[in-house]
Image 1 (tube, rainbow, N blue to C red):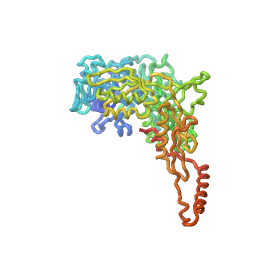
Image 2: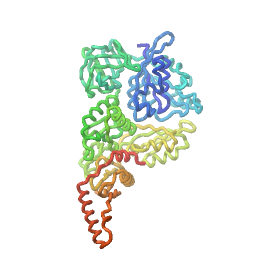
Image 3: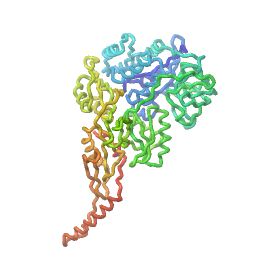
Image 4: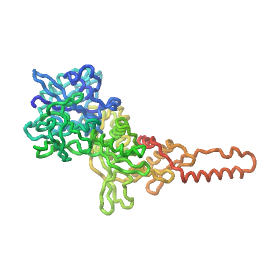
Length: 595
């Protein structure tokens, strides 16, 4: 156990985590030359396409230092704020972390939040300045920022380049020297922490585990503490680029376990595995459940696919523990699920993965954040969906969730970013200068305001230089109203949203205009209305497709033409009573992307 090192790589988006991980794998000869490709650990097609890491990836390496063979278990983590739960799980399975900072950009918001997470778990931090080969690199300034943030000595900071491989051997030496070996007892009762899992259609569910105490072997009888289920272990092994079976996994090691589990409800990330005969006295603590930041309905396009969608979401949840779901139904869309996501990017990725990995075509409704409703009778409950709102007369007040946001930017953009935050009902908490030309703004913002387009606007007004990170910060009372969209007097529940009173009129008008562009013309007029309760606040009309019925009637008295027009009008009226308006799927998506 003295020769095992477990560490993860944490950084902001695009600071070069995955490229540096490639060099570590190359320099430890973990991969043969033919397997080497850029971002080798990002094995999901979606990750390679978008150039982002979505999942944490664990891999084992061997490094020889002073004739001693060390086992290094590396976990590469995502950088985006929407996948911070992946980072927290990886940190729970490690004793040390490489904190990577881009030499051209310096410290960003995600760098700070991931660092605090690592410090809370008392991990040993090794600061690394990456991309020092780039012309615009400012290693001395970035070094100053790291010293100020961490309070470490300058000699502890390693300068490296994931592209050229400079400084990689120094990093490997530092991992061996500075990161402590895992503490555990191979003689104690078995305790394994599940930090990830994946579904395999041939072998069932494969759980990725960190062995805290004891030893686990094939043919052992094990028990999952939170579900109480017992299984026989078919196979254990270590994680290289593929899974490599081994005779045993002992305390301090990271690996996988296969025990033929078929139902996804029986494996829970953060659960503890122990032996049936000699069980551990308690489960491993310190693993909090994830709290979704926004909710949206996910419905199959074809209502007959409901059960397929259920099994697809179950399997996806195994690999993405931050996804929560419960069944719900909608008048417009039939049966589906109310899913909880960590952010808009997370929602987009889940939708994309359902399509690619499970071939499920789904419609996603307008995302909502969780609100707390207090009634005049003194009851209080949480509402995730506008249709779950009680009658307006019965409501005492509604509380909306707030976040504490940290925006790090260059001083040139302070004015425009403050204007953006004030427009989103933000309150400035404090402003700190990290260096002469970099500032951190701390804002309290309503979560509902930043769900739609805040991040995109922030990036565009700061020319891509501002970074953004947030965490939940309680609830506050707010003047909220339910905005309904009516088509020919019928409410479309999938387009309803809870919104602040001040923004209701503009959003209602914009939604009506957008739907007018997207709903195809019918044989009758379609009235698109936005309403708050019984009050209509905006209206657009999609004009009917008309046939010129007077074409064959030329000359003569005007009454002849009028007779034909009246006859047409009656037909249109009858058609309107029986005709229904189909809302195309792109209309649901376009409403999310209103600018």
